[in-house]
Length: 608
Image (cartoon, rainbow, N blue to C red):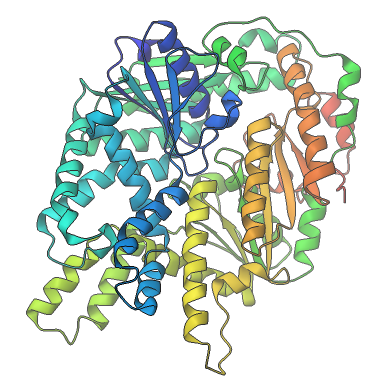
């Protein structure tokens, strides 16, 4: 592997959700320890699954990995970090200031901005504090999906610039006495990230046009902030040998090769590695050790796949959604499970029925227009772009609150609005505006990957608590965004997953988080199922066999309403393919006959 040649101290793995960053990061950690290196593997993903991959509980403290000498791991837990951060700030004034004042301080520190800063402080400490890292030769960062990672890696520079100029309200960073120390740390973090002798960035992608385009954008954005030492890894490529007797495998190989041949120009100069798709899930030490090697495949017994014949699809789900004539439909889940595609499929199917639909996304890395590749009557499309929303919010505040300020006051306000925390408020307000439209039309929301979505919901919850506190003695009726999300008559949450161990576990954890917030998911969608496609390729048949227990776990233990969508021969982009995926563009042919011939099954029967 090129990216393993003379590796520097810091290795960052980033890319679109679901491309295999965690698997490759974990396999890299094992590879380096077997070469005698001491390694710390760190996850900065708010929805980390490193512990699941190794089969151990890790959490927010450095933990040795059983069975791997010289390897330790750490999952930066944003919530735990935020609580410690709040205690550090509010603790010294408890018993000194009135309880009401202390409670107000804690409430102000309850938002997603504080959560982000607390996790960010832990991240920068690993780059800059020798006391934490002298025991390790390498520190490997398994990062959150692309949009969140870009923001994380931009933050050292953003906060350094803010503090260098800052004379405004920096209370979100803690006591002002600590700002000099933080300024030095953030400056050191910028230097470490920009030093090619210390830092290497590995861009992980799949052999898909959309994923490679996103990686190209990531390459350019991170190059602008000084991260120039970049490598490209194309993961999960189906071996051409699997295409000999299987039309489905042949179609997948052809489209993957076409994507690789058309790799964006900016990526062609990067050192590149290619990792073959494996027949097993990347969970456990044996699987991880096999990732960078070629292994033989044992074909699954034909009888093992019969349970996948009676599966379900999107058509009936969409029929039930359409019956309400308006409402909010939110698709949530781990990165890379196909939320954007399924959100687009639901939106175009509703639009084709003559219903007004607004399709939007909160994912910083999502590009709905590339998925749709066309326009429809009744369908409007938008994206909550953090940069655009933040600038609009700044201009609005300056035009309203700043209009009556003198020059000094306006300068202070402008400086305060340059804080990276401003983005949290701006994105939340844009999210709130869009979901209010669901009272008159359908709003289909493609959300960011799990961790980023939970931070947005955290901001929603903080706003809800603040409004309720203010309205205690008021007779006014107010509906907050959180109330709308908690009302099953107004909102339907679709949890999207793959029939694989880690995505199902993460979707189950997300369901538990939502339930604690009083939000009940409406249905699950198991996407890109190999089992539902009835493959002939030995490797794909083994993967299909592995899927059956995950589908059964969803059906028996996690949701009474679910759908299974088969892996398709063609990437489901463009209106025609999206309508076919939803069932709206299908013929009356038996889907079982279609998959038996290597064709895609457009829809199947819903189980409840």
